[in-house]
Structure formats: structure tokens, C-alpha cells
Image 1 (cartoon, rainbow, N blue to C red):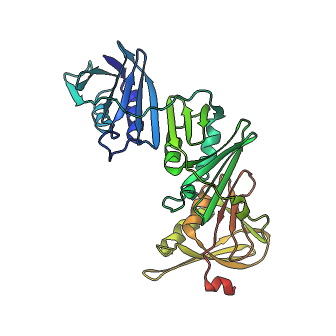
Image 2: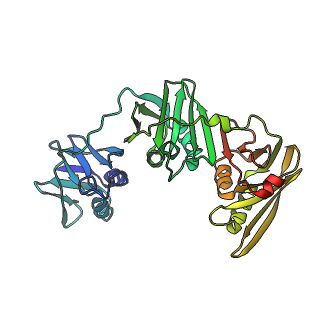
Image 3: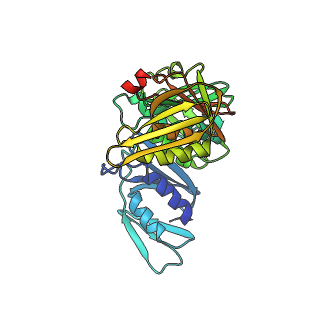
Length: 364
């Protein structure tokens, strides 16, 4: 018999359910392993693994496979308090002392289920540092690309800082945080980044990067992922060393304008024409199906000049939204060069958006 808190086992099963492979008759199941005082729930699709440990009481150790999605449904519908699991030979039974009934579910043998190491001897690091750099860069990674390295985030440690970079070749995001520790370098798939950000807690955590895999332990949750092979491009070459024109805008005000103007941008290109002049930033979007939008935003121009260019407004919107500052500075050299977006005062984060080159821009 296994006894554990409903809310705790529900969190563990839900975490596993997000990692299983629903297309596989075998890996659609999660592994439930229990001992005298703890229970582990593991889900994997062979590329990503999520394992959660919760407290329990059990009169003997054991393990079995079960469908986590069905388990989540029935446990969610049960009352608060302890859940009692009776593992049988072919079925396991769920019950509660406050329920006048029980629910049995099929279980399977865990033979040949993938095994994963424990996070031991890893690198100690503050969870907020990892969360910060991943959150500020994840949007720029490609979701569908023929180049696998673009579908992940490059995470590195150089002994003094932890750094993250992501690009889909049309935009770039980079972030860093002061962090003393060991050196490492790995490209983490964007699918695993989502799970890391979902379950990483607060306070210290451990990471264990290797040549082909990456593991993270935060609180009671462990995440394992295969890494993306290949050489990540030297994205620092894309970042302008200096900009001929710079404007600074209030982040909230700029996002309001972008939320309105994107409605009139073409669905595929999301192209918006931007005209910069001292004190003003004018946005123009045209859509042949339903009209045109034009709006002017007042800005500060510490480095002056006038310029016209076109950009993907959705890319600009995501880059600005990730900036952790009240004011955003946008730097431009010409209509065909990378656009630099950075916090006005804070350091350690920047984004680059490549302009959409048109005949109109080249003529300007």
C-alpha cells in the first residue's frame, strides 16, 4: 500500500504527462517508483525526461507503468487529503478513506523503460539566474527550421557569467547574468526550455551538462534532455558595435502602439514601415484586405537623424516585451542593417531584428 498527498502526486503526474510520447504505446505511460518514504513519477519521450519526487509512506518498494493522463483525470476528481494506492498484479487501485468506493486502472511492467541518472555532483547555480537568461531569449529560437542549432538556446558558463543566446537567423536575443562557477557550453532544445521554465523553482538548483545531455534539478523536479549537436553561429558578429541613430521610448507606450499597429500588418510578412526623426517614431502598416494603420510615438533622440525602414512588427514586439526596463533604446545605422533593441539603463540583455529589405528602403 502507498499513501501520499493528493496535491503532491497530482503535480508529479501532471509533470510526467507533459513529457510522455502519446504516439508510443509504451512511452505514453509514466513510471511510478516507490520506496518506504518517497515516490517518483517519471515521464519521457526518449529526448526529454521529467521526474518528480514526492513524500509517501509505503510498506514495500516497487514500480509500475501507468497512463498519466487518465491518472490525472481521476485523481483531480478525488477529494483533498491522502490518496491510497494498492498495486496489484495487473491493476492498481486508487481509494481514499473519505470515499465510499475505489477506482482500478491497468498497469504495465517497467521492463525496458529508459533509465536516467540522478543529478549528483552538478554545478550549483541560482534558479533565478537560469530563469532570467532563458526567459529573455527563448522567443528568438526557431520553432521549425532545417538547421537544428537554430531550434535551441545556447547556454554557456565562462566561470564568471552565465549566458544565453537564441536566433532563428532573422532575429537574435542575448542575455547574461553574473554567476561564478564552472565552464560549460550546450545547445538546449526549445522544447526542453519550456519544461525547464515551467518547473524551475526558486533558490539554488543544480545543473549537470555533458557532451550530449543536460540535466537540471530544482527542488523535487529533475529534467533531462538530449542536446542539439552542431556549432552555434558566432552571433556577436551581428550585434552593431555602435549605432548612428538611437531613440529611447517608454516600453509600455511602445508596446501599446505595437499592439494596435500589428492588427493592420500583413499576415505573412508582418511588415511595418517605421520612420524615425528627432522626437518622433511613426509606424505605418497596410493590409490590402482591410485598410491601413498609422500612429506616431514621441521618443527621445540622444543620437539624432532621420531614417525609414521596414521590420517584422511581431519580432519587434517580442523583443521589446522581453526588455526588463522602463525605457527601451532602439539603435539603427541604415535601412538594411540590423536593428538593436536594448534596455535604456540596464545591461546584460539585448536583441537584434533584421530589417525587411524592400526597393523603397534601398532607395531611401
